[in-house]
Image 1 (tube, one colour):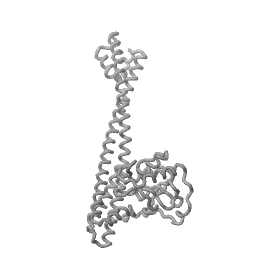
Image 2 (tube, one colour):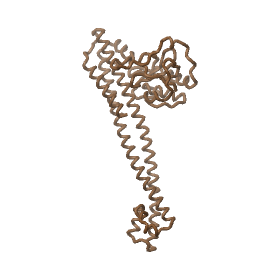
Image 3 (cartoon, rainbow, N blue to C red):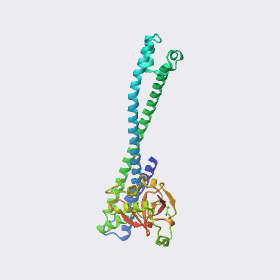
Image 4 (cartoon, rainbow, N blue to C red):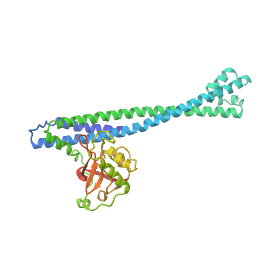
Length: 341
């Protein structure tokens, strides 16, 4: 995840440099300058989309780690409480041995504080009954488990801190990309701004990835009826048409691209992972030529964007900041893969 974040940030930095180096285009600029600015804006949105998925992955991992830490700490508290009760039993055994003259007071203290060392001494252990040895062995094992759990909890806390730092870094990078996009949008006239925002993510001129291709006539053919689950997911996604794209949002009032897909399929009774790259692995990959309504469509080389196929060559998706959940052409972005849940 950290590597993905670094890769995304490096790519983002390249796009920002390109955008900053280009001449600002004002309302009176030529069509070529306006087209260049719109291309740069789309590139910034694509990079923000990729970073958003990195942020979503970090947030999802932080949630899992947070639960793991809570479970570890709860188990540790229970075990430590029980261990203290067991130590009372050890104290009683030590007192019995001391009174019986089996061990002196220093050895009795060692039995209470370091039962593993005491039990390892054959001469001392021979003075104990089988029941006493069994009890001491139980306490030694419980102490070992407590130590192991303490180390695991410490590792989980460290991983949680690193994951939260990664999420914060990704969030900062997304905000920077969006600030750059807003600055470029400000150089356009109001109609041009509206057109640039609604233009979508488009292709990636800086990449060799062109995506899968399909004969358009295949998309015009009647599609098979979607399954009941797919029909429910489509209905849920369409119910969210017009709701705004918000970075990191997963509903019910706003979404990013993978948040919309996760929420729609959740309402159909299917729990998908949080990010587009993870969702790409959540079902059976099918050829683009065999796409059916309800299938997930993953876009770009980095699998950084996702939509849901509706049929008739259309998808529903949450495009990028400044737009709402909407219906768009299936081939408006380079298709990486199609997945059937």
